Each structure stands twice: as C-alpha cells, then as structure tokens.
Image (cartoon, rainbow, N blue to C red):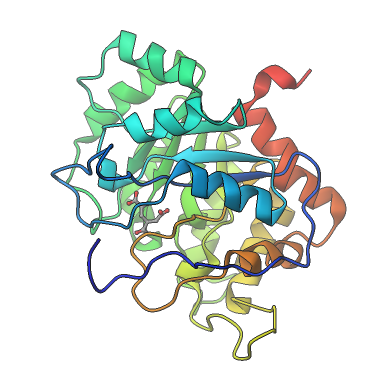
Length: 301
Ligand code: 0GY
C-alpha cells in the first residue's frame, strides 16, 4: 500500500437511516488480496487489501443486501479478484469489469456467467493511461450485444471535450459520482447545468450520486456524534435524484481508494441518503428498483 494513503475506516458507525429491502451498494470495490490477486503493473496507485469477506460484512452491517462491484484501475483488465468475489456472493453481487480490445468473446461469456453486466471506461487522467476512443467504441459495441452497459468516470472540466463520445455510446451509460462537479460552484451554474443537460437530452444516461466524501469541501461533521456530513454536496445529488429518479444509483465506494486526508465513516455515507432522496419513494428507486433493473433485470417482470 502507498504509505501516505489512508486505509478504510476500521469501525464505521451504525447508520440511523435503515435502507429499504433489497437495497444495493452499487459502487464498491475489492482489492487483492495482493498475494492471491496481484495488482496491475501499469497501476497508478497501490491500495490496501480489501477482501470480499470484508465487503460482504460491511454490506450486512450497513443494512444493505447487495453489491455492484466495480473494477478499479489498480487491477487493470485483470478481473480475477472481481470474478472471485462475484462467485462467492451467493448471487448477491454483480460486477462492472475493465476489458481491452484484446478480450475474446469467450472471456466475455465467462465474465457474464460470473455476474458482470457492464464495462468501465476511465477518463480521470491521474488514474489511467490514454486509450483511443475508437478502441473504447469497439468494446462498447461488443458489450452492448450482451445487454451490458458502460460506466464512465471523468472530471467535470473534461465533459465538453468528451460529450460527443459519451452521447454516441450505443447502450446504457452510467456516470460515476455525478461527473465529479466542483461543489464550490453554484448547483445551477454552467458546469453542473451541462451535466444536467447530458442526462436530460440523453435518456440512456444514468448517474451515480456517490462519493460526497471526494467532492465535498465542507467535509465530515465537526463534532463526533453529529451525522450531517458533506452538506455542500447535498444540493447537487438531490437535484439529480429529484430530476431523474429512475436513472440514479447510490454506492459507498468502499474501500475508498486514493484518499490521503480524510477517510469516511461508511455509516455516515448511509445517513447521507435521506438528505439527497428525501422521500421513501425516491429512496426505493435509488437504492432498490433502479439497481435491480440494471443489474438483476431477470427479476423485473
Ligand atoms: C473510485 C474513485 C477513484 C478510483 C478509481 O478505478 C479507480 O482506481 O475509480 C478515485 O481515485 O477517484 O470510484 O473508486
């Protein structure tokens, strides 16, 4: 593990908010264990080990029922740790993989059988080397044929440049962390308006309203015991949840890679939910109905 980076919270608090039945943590990771599943040589950071057992224990502790495990860049396109976690989840986890052009149809079938339902394209410059857009478009076309979607991760300042590529993707698209807005700018300012326009004009594009701890400037509560964390992110996430209630997902981002200054208490992240989804109907969609439709469509009649 990189020495100046933080490990995940060792004993998160019990959330006051109780998620509805069927609630899904739709953005989380497994890392290693490195001895069994080595990290990728081209990685930009080395996280701590974060096992499937620890992830599933956190799921239960927080009152959640299912996970969507997302391949992080530190494992490159070696999806073995992800597949191992999915196979040991008892059907309670689905996955988002990373693949390159070289992936074979047979390998895609194996990923599908394990529970993978999407691929992730990462455009955050500190995390990945550049991949040509024609390669990504070719992958998107192949996985669209399997009924998979594409998860995209980018910074808000890069949206104008990436707009044409994103809007040409031939399948459902899910944006990580609301496209990482600068929350010191107004929620109705030009930067976030562009993101809202992306979803308004493109009904195939969804958003995760995740990672307040990465986006926040105000940060966690000042006092121990207070549960009002990351309040400056609330207007942004709430606007997306209320405007696009059928196209939003929520996740913890456990074990929170790449955080150097502040590690969130996962219980506080769960208690953030009622602030961004203020009615039971919105929470039902955000936490249960939407992820089920995308990741367990066979259960939806
Ligand atoms: C996240 C956020 C980050 C890392 C990755 O794949 C990754 O390495 O996504 C980040 O550093 O912002 O969603 O896990």
